[in-house]
Length: 259
Image 1: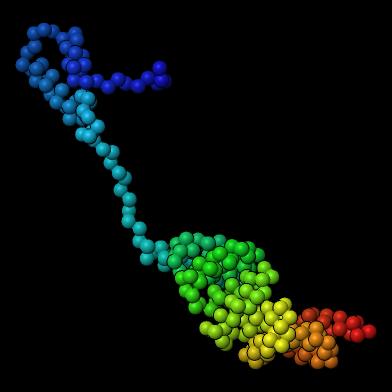
Image 2 (image 1 turned 90 degrees about the vertical axis):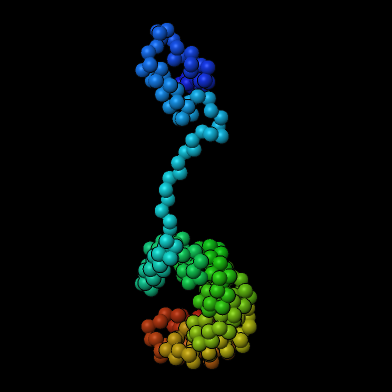
């Protein structure tokens, strides 16, 4: 027997028998009325062996309708907070806000692109690519997404794919010095030295105070065996940013190699 024991389900005959037990044979009008009322009540609430089709159904809880526009607005506000934190290089709290923002606004390519970029900043490259691809499907020509995909594949040492995504982004937004610099780096890794120098030159022309492209032209020239030209580029880099260690280290290595 199961424990606790289940109550038996009574039929009409059973119930009539129970009502008759210990009851006087002579019933007055009031007793009959009470008996009839009890039987009617039990029949109404389904305790007289009614078929399942007429049993009362459970009431469903009332659920408030969601305001999806309001949720998306909250997601966009969180994304703005994440962007501000990222600008101060507070990537972990920025990532947390961007993750929540993507749940509130899952169809926003801007939010997804930001989330992918933050995954990239925190070294989660595979996750970054997956999110950025989602953003790209929603907005195929969004340059920030294309540039971030280029950076992600560069980190995975997939230099050809990196170059393709960067090229696609520059077709849409051709005035981005950082993207030309990244494309130059991809070409450098592919040993397409002339193409690399051309992209570095474009970056330097767009932002004359941006020293990394000039420094990297020096690296390319050094790889090509053009030591004097490379030294000249590193000197130009130091003129723009005297405290940068990279051109100083490059010059020291080049002079050591020269003997």
